[in-house]
Image (cartoon, rainbow, N blue to C red; front, side, top):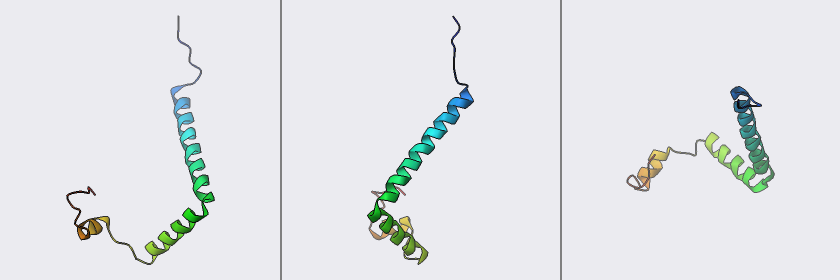
Length: 71
């Protein structure tokens, strides 16, 4: 008996990508509804724009964590 499929491989891939996109959108909506998280993200982005950040490698060296953390 011949196996019957309803979707082509391309259609299955498209559905998989659509499902992933829906998950990402739901996560985005969840984050957007968290007022404290949005406030913290805005503050962090402002610090980046103001140059108040440093490279992860520098922080690891400063904290003497070279042997414990892989960058």
